[in-house]
Image 1 (cartoon, rainbow, N blue to C red):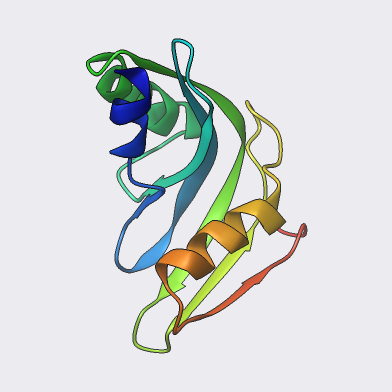
Image 2: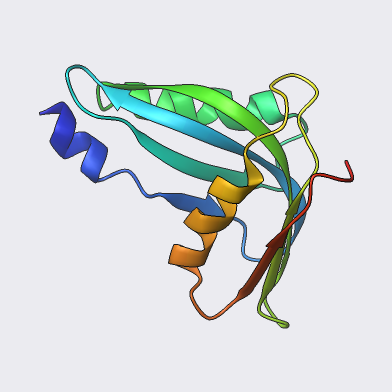
Length: 119
């Protein structure tokens, strides 16, 4: 049951445009393997806002998550580019290389770059 719920969780959910905070989350179900996912939205004032809303949504399906870190995304769809950078004060820096690979799978025709610099 948890494995089926886990398989339905989208790997990437981000806003279609702009600069915004993101978190890298590890999602688990009871007795199921884990899955790392990216969530990034402009409505979030803090990285914790992204984590808390996602955790609530996942809990309704019997799943839980932990935050592996955060940063920022600069999504420029007109240029087909996403830049991953920065860190979360509360959760620390996400592994931007992992985030970049997740984004490349979702946006194969984009140029996706990352840097540890910036906030």
